[in-house]
Structures are given as C-alpha cells and as structure tokens.
Length: 134
Image (cartoon, rainbow, N blue to C red; front, top):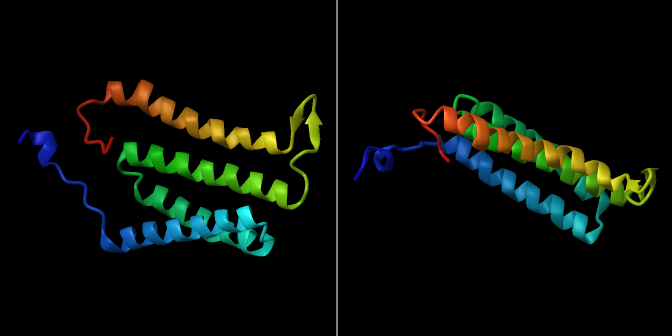
C-alpha cells in the first residue's frame, strides 16, 4: 500500500451529521420546487444554503474541499434563484435580448465551474505535494 492510499480524511461525526442533514434539506427544497410548493421550497433555501456555507467554512483549511464546497454553495444559490424565478412567474421575463430572468442563474452556475476550473487547471498542478481529497 503506497503512502497516498494510507492517508485518511477524517470528518468529525457532528460535521458528517450536518452534511447528511444538508442533503435532506436540499431534497425537500427540490421536491417542493418540482411540486410547486412555494412556501416549503422557499423556506428550505435557508437551511440548505446556510449549511452549505458552514460546510465550506469548516473545510477552508483543505483547499480542494473548500473549492468543491464553494462550488456547491453557488450551485445552491443558482438553483434557488431559478426556483424562485419560476415560483413567482419571472423565469420567462426578458432581461435583455433573448436573456430571461431564469438565465441569470447561469452567473452562479458559471462561478462554480470557474472555481473548479481554477482548482483543477491552475492550483492542483502547482500544489501536487499538498494533501487533497480529489
């Protein structure tokens, strides 16, 4: 077994429980979106996004984890914006040209892609000696 296989990434049980609860909130948010249950969907944004931010903060000491968790956070932001735009009938309103309100969700989606692109294309190749989870 080489040294890379022997390294462990330990997550405190309290953090893991929070991550698992985060998934529950996220699923309820998306189920509410699918079923057009506005109050539940909008309410679930708060715990889903809040926990995502806490997870990113707690993993800030491992850059690979931080980047992935920030990408998840902006994904939830984009997803929540898109959901709300549909809930309030704004999704098809034109902002300019052929761009609709729903298309504005691409800003945080692309931000997440750029964060991961930076990590994989720039940071990771220059820091191969660092412990990373990916």
